[in-house]
Amino acid sequence: ELREQLFCAKIHEIVARGGRCLIPVFALGRSQELLLILDDYWKKHPELHGVPIYYASTVAKKCMRVYETYINTMNHHIIDAHARGANPWQFSHVRNLSNVREFDDSQPMVVMASPGMMQSGLSRELFEGWCSDRRNGLMMPGYSVAGTLAHHVLNEPKDITTSAGDRVPVNLSINYVSFSAHSDYAQTSEFIAKLRPYHVILVHGGEDEMARLKSELSSKYDPKVTAFYNPKNCQTVQLRFKGDRHAKVVGSLAAAHPIGGLPLDGLLIKKDFSYTLMAASHLHDATSLAVTTVMQRPRFRYLAPLPPLLRALRGLFPLD
Image (cartoon, rainbow, N blue to C red):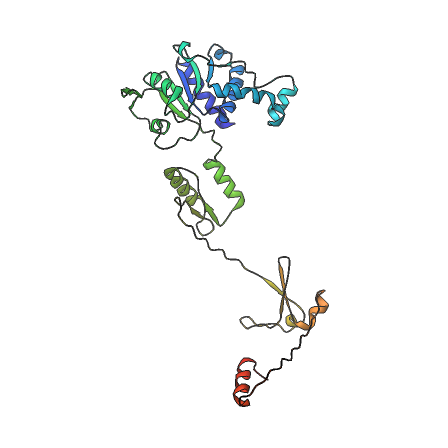
């Protein structure tokens, strides 16, 4: 809820100053979630009713029919709204941008365009056309891959090279509010605090971001209790697990008051996750198990002298 408020507030700020807001996204998934958020926010703010919200994607338009049809498979907020007679996917303030070449982008507006990395396509075209105007703004709603324009502009460069090879200044405001399906620091930290694991391995993230996350988590938790790792691809992580096992001594073994440090002779019985140490004579009384004696009398021909054999047998089976 907090990130939704921040997301809408930043966009409101951009259009209120007369600017155009570009939201680079992928065609499916996150885009529909953001459209729901914006349409609901626009309904609550009459001063924004004159500011259009566009989504420019043929694929997204086609998939809207799927979203409108299978409302029964969605979360309870959408199902409840539909039960009250409203279809949340039939937007009041969002429209599809069918013809990019003919729309007037001289007025304040919000445009959600693909691709999300702005390497090419409409999102790149709009960014190159809008980035030099200080009134405009860019809202990044998710993770960007290193080496892409989306990742590059997050570092707020003074200018960029357009697809045509020209250098243009970057004066628009750049905002980042993550709606990624990946967990952020707050969510990861909360999850670790609840589990209190001995080992945490951080994977599937940017190298620099992972290093910062590991550093912050390591400073928050006692390294003697929880160890953090952020291995590189194909790097091996070796973990050592230590587990204490406790056995309850019963019967005559317990009555003899065992002395610490000395060996104790008995039967170790495991049931589920508990251990019990007892004398063999108490096995039948304490458990449903029984003691069985197995006697073997092997016979073989031996033609050598007997004393060497006896010495060998005494070495294997000491006699009292």
